[in-house]
Length: 215
Image 1 (tube, rainbow, N blue to C red):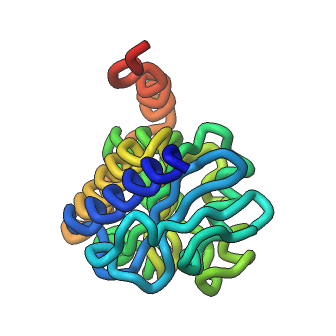
Image 2 (cartoon, helix red, strand yellow):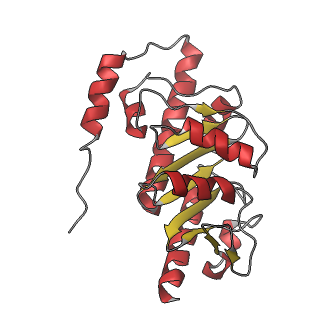
Image 3 (tube, rainbow, N blue to C red):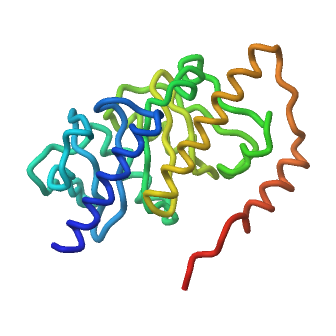
């Protein structure tokens, strides 16, 4: 129980930080982290500023809910990402302004900037639209995430996964930054894109990017 309590505190802090940094507002969006036999996720319909750690919800791999609150209505795609992507330790879903603006036009983010490779490929795809909370939405997200750790969601927002909550949130902020930059480039006309050879090279460099985890 002590471990779950610490995980709940970490999850809540990440959700509150997501809103504080401006990529999400109110009770929109959600955050989860992997734990034994499932994952912990933010509750549905609650402003994270008003939540306490005990409001976080444990969901088993079979969908069994433990806790005093109902889980986010988007729990299905969190479950399915954890089931199919062993490297995912935490997930951030946000209705970030610039990412959502692109997604409402069914636009992903192409190789206009080398940092697009940060998310695993030469572009960030936009998942097809499906009603929130449905299995159809989860299936569309899994398809858009193939070979990637992030995607946009048509008429909805963004979803990003990382090795832990801090890493997932940092990637979400980076994705929103790229979305804003790409939106601004579009105001100037058709963007000039990096070619496949350069993006392949950059992707290989990102394989060893950053600091190693302390031992």
